[in-house]
Image (cartoon, rainbow, N blue to C red; front, side):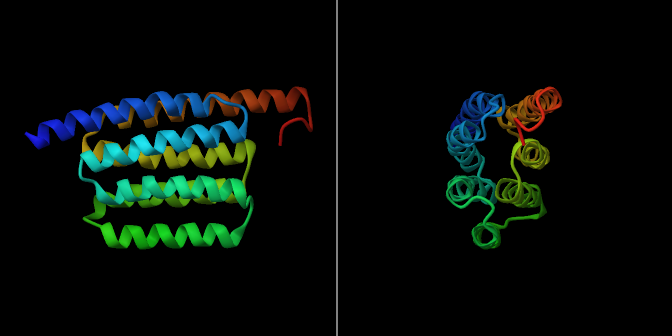
Length: 175
């Protein structure tokens, strides 16, 4: 019974994350992007927990701390190192198999992007992180989560293109 309930709940949280993620990555404002990502990652963490993918669930929760730290301490290599260390410790404590590796890769890519980059370069690294998260969702069998990440990839690519065009038209307006 729990397995069926867990699967249904996991799919539900994946769909909630899909909606929040599309809203986040369609934003041209870095601050709004990060705030919406907070909510989406709560849904992702719940989804991974329902599928009993503990490393991905733990790292999804750490994404919340990462986003807040990146907002408070932009470009801080010390804060980035602290988040990466916490992520590696969480992965070590929850590691089940090599199927957890894409979630770890996603966390590293996203962390480096959020702390060291902004604008288009940040979104490119977040897009690569979304590819790794997609693998995590596919491994656990989450249709909603995989669709969410695929939509993030597409929406993020469109936003990068839009930002690039604005930068071409109005040099110096967007970094």
